[in-house]
Image: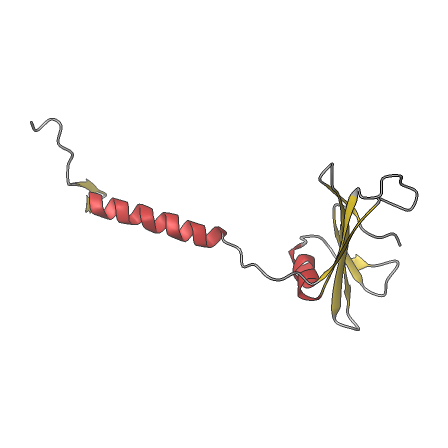
Length: 130
């Protein structure tokens, strides 16, 4: 019967649109949207330690302390959408996002970032004191 048949094409703003075109466009949108949201992965340059929060903490393995350097630190520094300020402790410029800090040393053209993660609370905390 003609009532249950789906049309092979339809008009959209004066253009003939076929079912095949709609499916092709949907596939193209899905593929390109995945490419837009895909990230390029890089090796991390830095060091880490599992330790207590500070020297007086009784819990020895509560924090993952991270120090990034090189390209890893530079990329994080550039990704921080904050204003850089002179660092009080180091001879460099600092950016801070929450408790995460990165420092750029203009004279050496080097970057370093410091932060720690409270493992059980899954919370970023400051990495190193001044």
